[in-house]
Amino acid sequence: MNDSNLFDLDYRIEAGKLGAPIVPIIDAHAHVGGLNAAPILREAMDCYGIAEIWSMTSTIEQIDGLRDIFQERIQFIAVPNWRDKDPKQTHGVGYAKRIEEFHARGARIAKFWAAPRGVDIGTEVGEPNLMRLDNPNRIAAMQMAYDLGMTFMVHVADPDTWFATRYSDHSRYGTKASQYEPLERMLDRFPTRWIAAHMGGWPEDLEFLSGLLTRHPNLSLDTSATKWIVREISKHPREDVLSFFQRWKGRLLFGSDIVTSDAHLVDESTKFEMDAKANSAQSAFDLYASRYWALRTLWETNWSGPSPIADPDLAMVDPVAFTPKDSPLLRGIALPNEILKGFYAQSAHTLMRESLNRTESSSRL
Image 1 (spheres, rainbow, N blue to C red):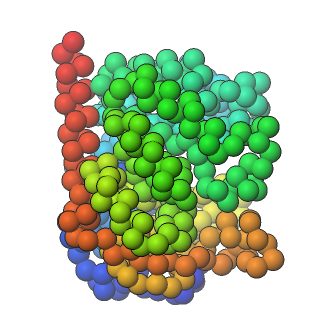
Image 2 (tube, rainbow, N blue to C red):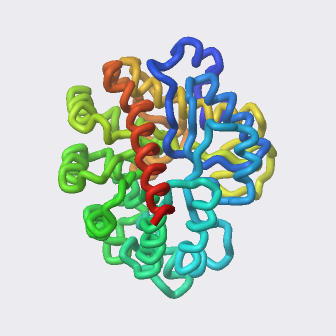
Image 3 (cartoon, one colour):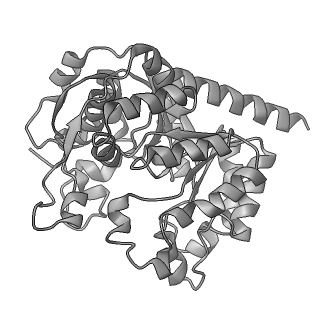
């Protein structure tokens, strides 16, 4: 047992119980890195009917190797090099050049990360607004991506649990609602297609998301960040979630936010937080497969019970009632098949086709 498998499930057997999805699934939000870990992810994809994955691979030199492993089943999203030791360059003026490099390697989506904790990154280099979407250097990078005809992906907010704890100093981080002010300005300024990750950063408030989608027809949402999505969607009445998916059919994309790394295959005590989530090939498989099991169970079934994935946010908010090893309720929504078909595949197919058409048109200008 491990934090991705609290109840000692065999995720290969569990995949068989779920059976094939209604259509092969496109995972529109993941972080695939590590050429040794990638085949383990590919097995998890095969088990759970994931036909294609869109990856924010920060090590651009791994792209060719990952294409060898996944063939036509992988698309790449431009991202900064998060391990670069010069954040001011990486997340500032240098990102426009990196977007060009990704585009030359076939990427048709560019990611703009603007989570509240970007304030901490910027403050360390003397520029607290470094990661804001309306920072002039970010706008220059967006202009580069826009001129290339690319789709934009954005991470603009974090869970309510974090605003109650990590971000409780609103004078430093702002309120959750304030995170969306620069986003809405940029949505108008760059009328390309946008994807707001993690259900727009506010799965806790479906009414707010509907308002955002109404105001900005160029915006879609992905449903990545498995622990967060499972925890919060399970709290909503089924009829509210079903109504939301029916209303916004065509603008919602399946995503997992799986992160793979070769560090998941070794047992070391000094690993980064994300690298420490697994320490062997089996625990790495559990890490990757558990996300697909939880998400397909959430969206497809009416199963109800504790999630098999530990969720430390529970203890963050209430350390008396919970430990970091506890998990929330997973309550299946059982979306109708017609909604699942669009959500699992057609929305992503349409968005990527539009992206390809835009970049081809831009290249002819």
